[in-house]
Length: 484
Image 1 (tube, rainbow, N blue to C red):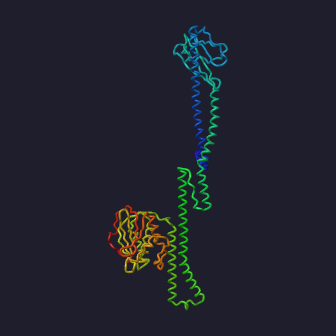
Image 2 (image 1 turned 120 degrees about the horizontal axis):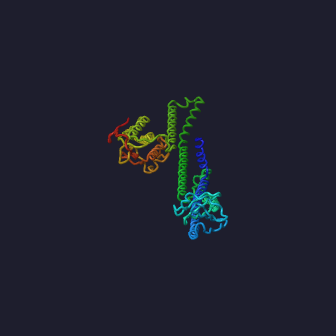
Image 3 (image 1 turned 120 degrees about the vertical axis):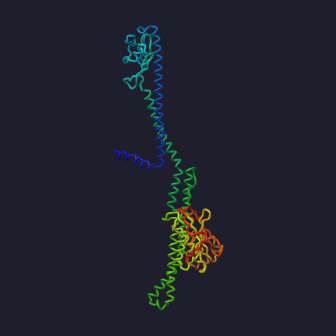
């Protein structure tokens, strides 16, 4: 039983949630008016009933005083009682011995009550009583002390007046509820018109895929803020789609050259192998050089595919953010750079600086900076990597002794697939520094490029520092450590 009772509110809730906002506003308006009319009806009925009672009681008091004055002059036994008019007020005289006198033809009144008898005996001056009558109303009897007895005036009050008033109020209430529902529907339609237009515009954008169709700004307050938020979302989607299109176009352009070269070399090997002239057409030295080129091209394609995947993911990452020592990340990146390029030499000058970030993403950014510096730095000159705390920031600097970056290339050095003229003969995809900037931006930092004191490029990364989990001093400032 309790389970069934518990399901009913849930069904009602589900039903209510399925209704449109316009229907909800209409129901709320009609309900509010219905409750208001019901409360007003109850208050009016109560006030009317009290007013009718007060009027009847005042009339009974007035009739009793007139009859009492006549009885004191003529005596209770001889006083002339007014003839019964056929309806309306009733009168009765209570004699000292407890007997009563009533006008001829008047309907009988209930027996004298014990309290009325006490009034006749002088216990009190007057008494107002009410008794249920045979009809829908009730009988009011007023007893007033007069001479050695008392006089009574009575009146039957029926509910006809209240009933007529009640039916009138009910009719007015129904009209008010119907009018309230109509007004609520009209107000809801007018108030939700901007929402309807907004929904139609959103559906149009979803069907046409036209993100350039901005929704007209109309209305005010919450409606305007909602429209502005949706327009901002459309603008973000436009930028995202444009970036996606540019990435696809640039990726296709960058993949075209290595794939073409790889396909031509493979086709050459296949053709010579089919003819059985592979050994005669390609001496061992040339064949070795061709296979090395194929391996380099495959490695370049693998690196490009990995960088494209990393760049296309944007800020989406399954890696959680944690408070970490950036010095550990820098050392790990330097170690990986050494394992990838054995001839590279990295001189570390790092101190323990704590940041909040994703370890793998930060390590990839540092590794890309070291790889970029390794392409330019001479073999006898190490790449200098410095890490220090500077105010509320962690500052990482990667310094090489290469030719540096031309001033014309500085504004575009972090663009996707951008490669300076002097770098086109070197391996790489032009995505490394772009990935660095994306990782640094995702961590709330900033990356800049300048010329180092050794004449090469100096790339600087500023990241917000975080409170350390424990005071750890990994390497002291100014201490140079070379990774060979």
